[in-house]
Image 1 (cartoon, rainbow, N blue to C red):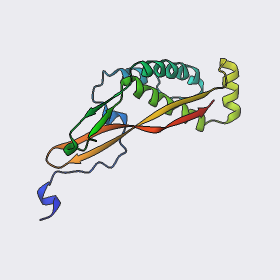
Image 2: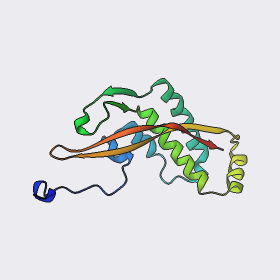
Image 3: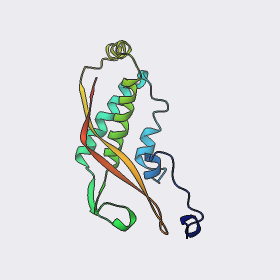
Length: 154
């Protein structure tokens, strides 16, 4: 018997796993904060940087938790659940990284000078997302925190 015969309506997920898959509540603090940044650009760097620093402090005060979970549903035996503040720090850090990678050093330095942004190193742990398809049960999404810190030289 073929897999298609057993689960005829199964469709594999072919898009990358994102925060939108993981967080299901549209009224989540994460989505509310991120909605304030429509199209991240170098001109928004100071505002995004201020938000990053705010949520980085809040993430230290409210870290995620490791909880026992159901490995039959694709979770780790001790699954990590990041706090919303950790997710925000990661997402804002990734936005800053993208801005730095898509602009020239000269343009970045001009904005830093104009906006009064000091040279600094930003550090954060990236949160990434994964899914597991459990036949007969459904699709489950999990968040993971990379152990290696991302360091951005600004």
